[in-house]
Image (tube, rainbow, N blue to C red; front, side, top):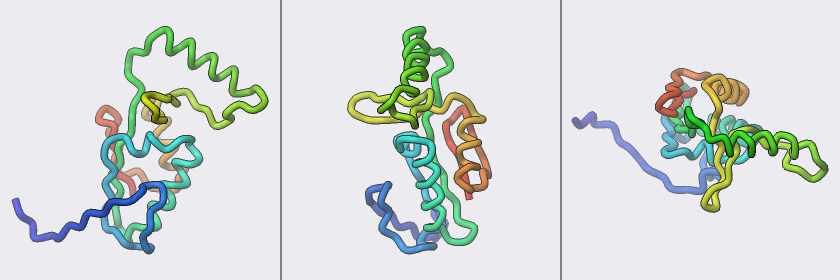
Length: 140
């Protein structure tokens, strides 16, 4: 169905967005782009910066990775080990349960709906809708 609304698509490094303030009415982040940003603080900083690119009443729809409902015993052990190691000198102090490295890529799997909600609100955005089971959020 045609709505007569023009759409423009841009391609850029999503961590270095070269756009002027208020450039977009809507921003769509497909796949698990939000979960691919390492560290909660960096994700929040990036999301706050993304808000600068929106026009008033603009929307961001982002997808995120959820922790699977059933987690292997091995993964539970690794998570506990990582939580102990994070306190050692030189360790990655930003480590969170759900941080993974697979196939040469970092990603963060959110542990529950409260974790993603706290992170989004902590970034200073308003959560309009959060669909935990689909891994989608609509924020302004």
